[in-house]
Amino acid sequence: PQLLATQAAICAAAGDKAKAKAAFDAAIESLQDKRNQIGALVGQVQASIEPALLAELLRPWANRDETGQISFLIAQILLQDKDSTAEAIIHLENAQTKTDTGSPNWFRLQHMLAIANQNIGDYLKASEIYEQILAKKSDDFIALNNLACVYTDHVLKPDLAVKYANRA
Image 1: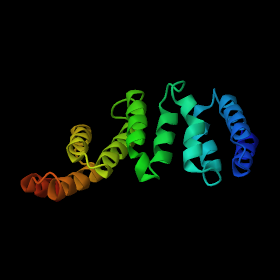
Image 2: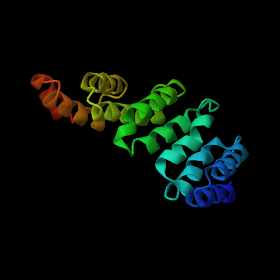
Image 3: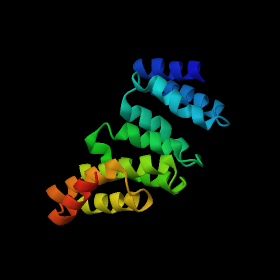
Image 4: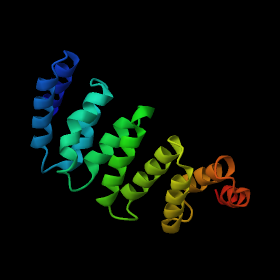
């Protein structure tokens, strides 16, 4: 798989999108029984392949992935470009439906989803997500801190902002 991923990166750098896709698909296909290695494979080529192309190469695999890991990886890639945040949110929500509530990955997804919503200016949605996190883990520093900031700067609930800031 690593050689195929390297071949995909080389083809992408040479501008041969079709060969890059074929090599990348073969690399992912070879890892079907080792889903936990897909993130490492993407990490290997991430510096060599433009984020938009890497997301494009991964998209067809997102619906076949029962774990949500590929949707999560696509979202991480898309979040590098502020103009792609709305699509990243869709992939995060897809990954969320495939992740056990309360698991470490669920918290990571929730944090990213809340921050992505903040980035597009949906502060109410972000605050709802932070509240969901705190319902599961009342001492979550990231949620407490970010919720205090959202309530201070955007939702304008100073009493709640102070409450969450003190807990952080």
